[in-house]
Image (cartoon, rainbow, N blue to C red; front, side, top):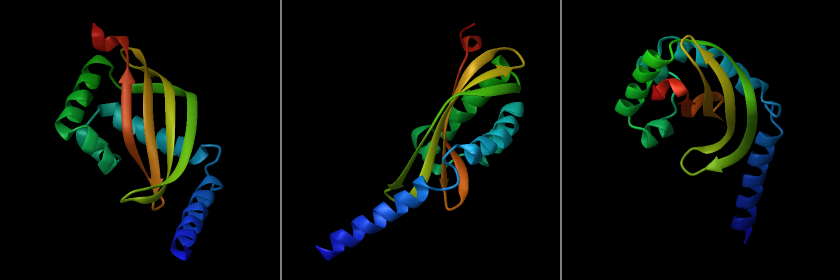
Length: 144
């Protein structure tokens, strides 16, 4: 019983520390996106994307598939010009194998050189570093 109580205390403490952490209003995550999205979406280069992708991203989307998506986006959308946040939410938790982390999910209205679209992305902060865990872009330009 003591082990279960101790584990529950540790889990609750870790989650409450994350929940009351410095990014309750999303400013840290938004700053990360302000820096990384233009770098990734200017050239849509896989080597640039690799710098920011979490290992979980490549578990669900093989690197070759991500590279195909980036090449398609370079051709159909062009560089990112600007974006605005439409929706934002966060979750704190402890994940099996990675420990405590903070996950933020964003929906962004985006304007690219050749078209407009919607960006849906999820970023995770763990060990004081942010990484992209999902990235989706929806645009009519893909369907032309």
